[in-house]
Each structure stands twice: as C-alpha cells, then as structure tokens.
Amino acid sequence: MRQIERSHRSVEFKYQNISAVLDELGLPWIPGYKPKENYQNALFSAIDRYLSRTPRVFELAPVPPEQPKTISSVFVTPPEHLPPRRDQPEALHSLVRKFDPAERDIRNRSLGRAGEAFVIEVERKRLEEANRRDLARRIRWVAAEDGDGAGYDILSFTTSGSESLIEVKTTHGAARTPFFLTRNECEMARERPVDWRIYRVHLFAREPRIFMIAPPLESSVQLIPTTWRATFAV
Image (cartoon, rainbow, N blue to C red; front, side):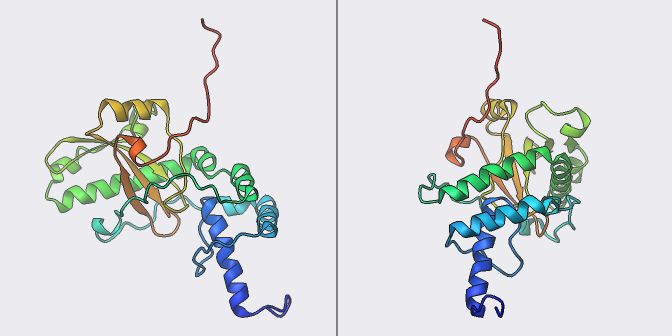
C-alpha cells in the first residue's frame, strides 16, 4: 500500500481479481481472497509474466489429503450448466490457452492417480457406512489393475449391489475447471448410462470435493472436439 499509494481495500480488491483469473486457470485462489471479476489487461500480462517464470506454481503436491470424517461432506451439487460466456476479455482467453488447465491436469498422471486413490477410499467408506462391507471389499481399481482404456477407472457398487462404473477427473482447480474426455469414456457413457458416472474431484490440494455427472453428458457439460485422428486409410 505504501509503495503504490493505494488503500487497503484497493489492494484487497486487486488480489480478488487475481484469484478470479487463477480460478479460470484451474489454480487455487490466493488464501483469503475470494474471486471477484473486474479484469484489466494489465492484470493478465502481470499474471502471465509471473506464471511463466514461476513454474512451481503448477507443481502442487498430488498426495491424497486426509479422508473426510463423513462421506456426506465430500459430495456437492454440480455447478449449473451455463451457456458459453461472451463477455470475457480476449486477453483472458489467450492466458487460458497458454496455461490450459485441462491439458495440464491430463498430463499430470500423479494427480490423476492420487484422485483415483482418493475416490476408492471415499467409495469404500460410503459402502461401509451403509453396512455393505461385502461390496466395499469388491471395489476394483480398474485403471491400475487392467490399464487405461476400459472407459472408466473404478468399479464400485450401489448399496443395492448394482455395478457403478466411475470415471475420475481430478483438478486442483475449482468446480468449473474444464477437463478432457476420451472416445472410450464417451462410448461407455452411451452404452451404460445407468451405471456410468463421472466423479469430478476438485479443490484437491485444499479440501477435496466431488460432484457427479451422469449421462447424457450434454445435459451437464458442453462437449467441444479438440483433437482429430488423422489416417491414410480410405
């Protein structure tokens, strides 16, 4: 405040603006500064410079946090499905493209595995709390035991004994952080819509929360094609 001759409230508001941009980038907010949108182009270039020279910001420990005391506390309501925003500055879009949170998360295999391990423990606790220890013992970590490609990561069960096919998507960011889906995952969602679910694990570095997305996926998220397979076959 002394350096720039601004009030406490002015500096606090600017940190809230920075938290809002970090939220768009799928990064944790600045502690104590809830995101508040009031973007200025100078803010984007300053954040760009800082993130470019401080890669450790993206190296948050993916170690599974302490398990919640109750399962009801970890599951939350999915964010509202909103139409694409048209009022965001182009500078913000450029920043998101440069530090793409979905791309960063999918490349962070240790984060993905930590999220899956967290969900397995949550599922076991959920079934044990429902007096279904028999089903809790049958949970399988499919992605670790059989490899990727099944179209889901974890085989769990409902309390009635039906199979629950869980695809885990983990981020350190907030609930609205985008994520990638594979062709296999989308096909499994169409083939077994009653059994298949996405468990979106977010805020993983701080206080993990999970919301579920059920097919049809288009009712909850906007699916945007980003890659194409090129082949020379006729």
